[in-house]
Length: 252
Ligand SMILES: [Zn+2]
Image 1 (tube, rainbow, N blue to C red):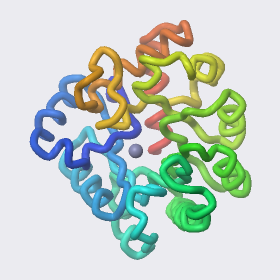
Image 2: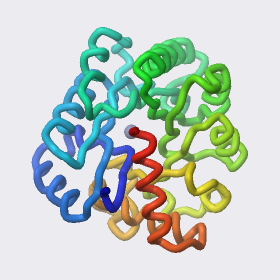
Image 3: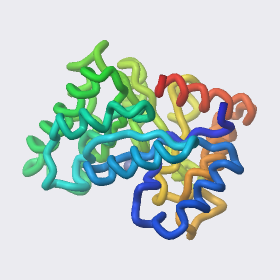
């Protein structure tokens, strides 16, 4: 069993091209496992290659709502990728109305998301959800699949009410290094059931304190775990073990 689990990272990003071996060496040293997330077909393929190569890495394959707007969901291509035993989820998929105008882009994003939801249900995989300025739209879709779909809403930045609705639908939420430098999510973190939350880094973005200013990497997820324990006022060891177990139960 790993010591830490970063459920959402992009070690397939160009930021790691030069020193990926060293980043992976730090995963081993810190006993951290991570799910490398695809945002389109190319990055999904790299995620699978990394999962194949390194014990500490799992892959999630899919298309981000706005990262590659030219790509549509080709089930036959993703059907081949998902057969790899270390592909543990579909995504990241969802809605983003921060980077795109809802009026102009809603239908395209909705189709892309629904295609991936259908695929996840067919393959019996959880979905890794990206939702930005879109919790209302997200809940509407997830409610229509109640009981049929499972997954995690990554980089949670919503209210306690949104979190409770997601928990009610059986979805977990994960927190990034953002919680080490803002108190905006303390209430959600404090009130969430411990078995419904997970730790992530979203590397290379949102580096946690005390590494601010540096490129982020999955071995820094211990800072996110520590922050969750502190905010909840719970024993760090107990929280650490629970978060690893939550990740393991998601990936089955
Ligand atoms: Zn991501």
